[in-house]
Length: 575
Image 1: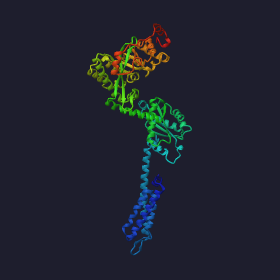
Image 2: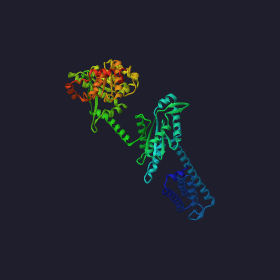
Image 3: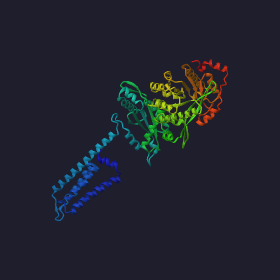
Image 4: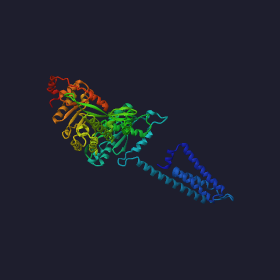
């Protein structure tokens, strides 16, 4: 592409006419200057090089030639050497001058065209992935800018679906097969997208392990079908050097309709869709405005956590735990509560899961440990000596200095280790199991009790369970709430209790809300329980009032019912 073509694409018709008019006016102005300053023999004729050079730079060598010929003729056969004597030039004089004008115009134009071609080449390189030669992220952003609906256009013709693919096990693939494996997989996926039947998508490599495909003419009703077609086109098993390798890929979809007007926002929506597919452990997810608002709200809430801790918005509540055999009280579970200045009471389910994926969980855990230690110390001073269970994350356990911090807090508030129980969610025990065991052993040496929280809802950790220095299994309330009517939950609860008994540890059921729940759990031999049947979580002051007035709730089950359950193998006993 030469500069002349670039000019005619870049400028509008009125702008081009204005440039030509300016240049011709400059030629006429130089001609008038030469005439009124005495003729061609004076130096003013060299001023003609200026419009010629400008024409070459702006319009290319063709423009330089045209203005050079115009300038040569303007100072040619009719221009005298001296206007006072009207002595005319020789033909060779003005022809020779015109030749120089032409040389300057051509050189200026060729230099400009060469520079333009070089710049265009650099721009092309900047818009291409150097390995796959596919258009890159910059090229996609420019393409989105072109296709976005504009005023006075038919919006119905601007319906596109942007599908992005992310390879999420890239590090494992590179570790196993080398750095070229990702390039090979990307090339194969791009080729398969180009060969999709009934579709001709534009394919871009927007990141080392990410592809994007732009499908024109997509209607909202066709989005799900097209996403499924992409999943079939981009299988999890890819070929690399005659091997079939597993690719953990997720797809995100964004429908570009007449409400979209920012390419960067569209790319952000695509990233959100991929992240949501990953979080939900689904192969594909299509972006919606509601998803974006939810994520924005969650991020804003996370930003308030640190400030909330400083402002004293977080408090601890305590839910009693009792022995199911006789209903006697034996301890509490500490639960964090957040009184947000704008949102009011914020449930832990709204901020703890997100905090566990960041360093915020460490700040929250440190706050909880300090608050609980201080409260236990106050209770002991008033004659109430009990065990308090604290929820901690596996990230906390593996954090350098966590155990030492806990020991220092025990010493600072003069709390015996046996008065503290750490509840760890089952799923967090699976990662780095050897390190977790080593850290837990340090804690148990200080007489700190360790339990597994929400047992049965996480990963299949039975193969690791025997390694862990734990004293108690907590059965999640999702299995307890509908006992004994829910047979599936009954099997799981029964199996968990028998497992605990065989391992020589205790079991505790969460979420006991009815007498029927209590009776059935006592029949199964569950050791402890907590739930609204006894009490909801209470502030420290309200807990004291509850503690002083508590009357044990005993099971009503008859001995016959106990024997019936013990002999009922359909309920999972014996294992």
